[in-house]
Length: 215
Image (cartoon, rainbow, N blue to C red; front, side, top):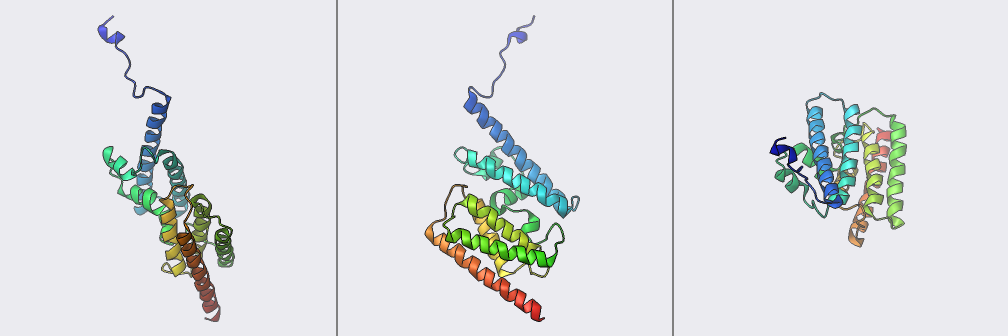
């Protein structure tokens, strides 16, 4: 037997906590790399919007869940990416800052929808969002899915322009909430501003519908 046979195995971690940390790092690395490949495939039109959107939503949800457990050890994901030499600018934008698929962000729905149904859904999502705030449901994990549903329903209305004020405002709020911990609650100023933005966007939406009916 050679001396190499008796050489001890190299361990990356010394205890269960360190093992979990390395596994989380590996998961984060994989999510970022996969998102970058997906974004590039979408840009190059090698994947359809219909297939891209649910895959992107899943990756964003996985990223949010994982980052909640890693915020103490990885407070800055871009620094993590630089440390491991990850050239993934499109993934960084999607996962860290945007928090929504490109189809949602840019108002290009992945599938056609009955306009009447989409309008009814949008009205309901506006009401749900405003009622949530009035009931003091101001935690990020309470508001984020509600606003995301609202944004997606607006994007299903083909006649609604991409620069519609409600879309612009909700996109900004979704991105802002996406960068906050799930348990964080909006302070009074942010809550009032969000409610104001929702109410003004709802009024603009109803005015848009009235204009469309008269046209």
